[in-house]
Length: 232
Image (cartoon, rainbow, N blue to C red):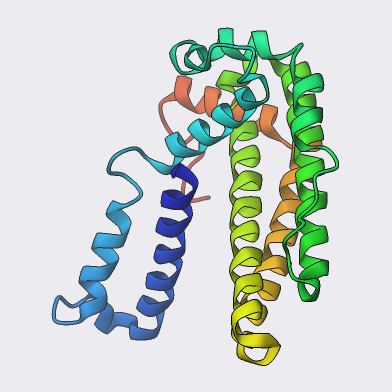
């Protein structure tokens, strides 16, 4: 539900943003409907939990999932650090059984390429989550950049699975020609999701997180931007 809420809100904002670009300056006038839509859409990023909080929740919930049958599911919510530490030794065995070699058995043959992208993504996510738990627990509960990448991977995989399921059902009911629009949507979304996932997977291994944290820490101590805005 957190994935659905977050992805829907961000998709809505992208649509509204494009609408505002089309309306241009007129979109700022309260007489134009896009003005109200822009204000309402932006509220979804803040009310009932910010999107940063939701991404952290998605990532930490997912990381403690592999040990759900062995570890008290409430531990991670009450004490994320303790819960993730206990999961470190369980991750390989239970996540391997839960995720590896799983295949989409009900996807339509016309979507075999998209299914392969999903299956490869799940496999890579398993490996990345396992490595993150072993390398960073218990500090992982404070690593927001890593949480963001894992959450984004989960979001794209969840949405891709939903697209494949919807298109497969459409093909069964309407045939290939009748389901062409669903097929087109699924294929274009798959290509976009695959590109985003590639960036997030690469970012788990090669990133500038430490440098970003160092810069932010110095900025916090300085309490201001350190350079003159106007150069003499």
